[in-house]
Amino acid sequence: MRCAAPISATSEGALKRLAEFLHQLASGLALGGVYAIMALALVMIYQATHLINFAQGEMAMFSTYFAWKLMDLGEPYWFAFFATVIASFIGGVVIERLVVRPFANAPILASVIVFIGLSLIFNSLAGWLYGFSVTSFDSPFNGRPWFGAGYISAHEAGAVVVTLCVLALVYAFFRLTPLGLAMRAAAQNPVSSRLVGIRVGWMLAIGWGLAAAIGSVAGMMAAPIVYLDPNMMGGVLLYAFAGAVLGGIDNPFGAVFGGIAVGVLGNLIGAYVVGDEVKLSVALAIIIAVLVWRPSGLFGRRLVARV
Amino acid sequence: MAILEAKGLEAWYGPARALHGVDFEVEDGGVTAVLGANGAGKTTILRALSGLIRRTGDIRFRGRPIGALATEDVARLGIAHVPDGRGTFVDLTVEENLRLGAYVRADRQSVRADFDRMFGLFPRLAERRRQQAGTLSGGEQQMLAIARALLMRPSLLMLDEPSFGLAPLVVAEIFRALGDINRDEGVSLLIVEQNASLALDLADHAVLIETGRVALSGPSQMIRADDAVRRAYLGY
Image 1: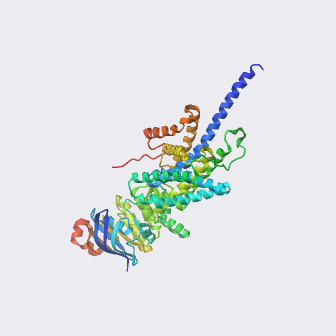
Image 2: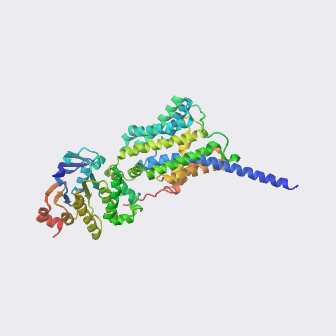
Image 3: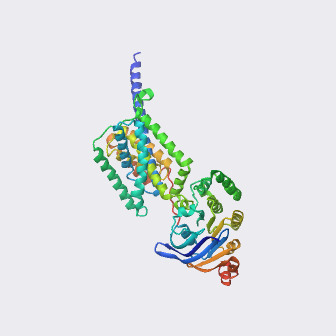
């Protein structure tokens, strides 16, 4: 009896550390899911245009404010959620037609400037319309944490489920529907696509719409964790970019894997190695490391030019 | 009656004019061959007809002017273009490539029947239907490109050097299939070929292009009998 106490104290400490570790892992998975969706949005546009949409994060932030406004006006969460997804899709299509299309044949740098301009516009517009102060954003997954032990909050668990639903829907759309096939074709070989009658220009616009729509889901899932403010997606976009680069910027599966991996790694390294304050630099370190040692990413295709 | 007529067709690559007023036509249900040396402008003619490059001139399909239409609208009228290099969607499966051919069609039932017909015409595609199209041999990719184009149910099929880089046996198989398609289904053909003797066997009319201009045109018999053509392009 005498020697039992210290042993149980140690094992209690070990259990506590294990619980803490599992909690970090779980919330890393939830954040990773958000990064994965954002990374997927980046990859969708990259595959079709070979450009990174630097405004993807601010577009998602703006969508999230739209959802917040709807709820502020008294709409129920899921109505606001789906209304935001649809509005974001339309917004993405309109942005492509009005702002991105005119630069389709311009040098890459022109498009990059357009994207940066877009991100500034959305950032200031959100600040002007809604203010720059940090606001809380409701989660539909309130109530008691799932899994009694509380390793994972209800919102985190819900965000993981939503992430999986989005990924399954995107996969089904691209694999199983004629429009999804046409979009893959248009991204891969625009000339051949036009020769079979596919309207490639519209495929690009729909791609922007889809990217904006799934980006809005990422925003709404991230907001209860990182809180709502015009700069909320800056860090998220950086992690998403790190995830996309890690998985291979031209591979949707790689981007999803990379996004989740970056979420988990970032959380664990933030908790155990460098501390929360410099967590964001983990993303930068990953980007640089991948670009130095494996530029095509884990699952990306190495580009070899035949001369 | 002509299904396709071109008068004074001009085309540009950027500021450089590549066609200087080309006239020709394709009979409804007929086969017209476009012959000429490398760089003469044969491929350019097809690209101009499909609107892949800037072009002017009077182009009519079934009497309707199509010179201002976008590429996808030309395709939707029933003009299928098998481009040089075959235009394979290399990362998609053989079956997905074929489904893209039928993308603009709404008649699901007859699409299914057409799939079976294509697999009958090119049995090798049936064996490889789940395979990534980029892993096919050159001949198989050419068959795939023709099958994809035929799934559009075109009334005019334009082919850019279907024999290019292929073994003689494969070329014979492909040209036999093209003959069947023309004879049995009444699809008109416009074939660009370097292999003049092969093309003249299939064609009823031929156009000889030299540096962006028509050097000679007329019935295949006449072209084949022309001394200059015989020496320069048929090699005897």
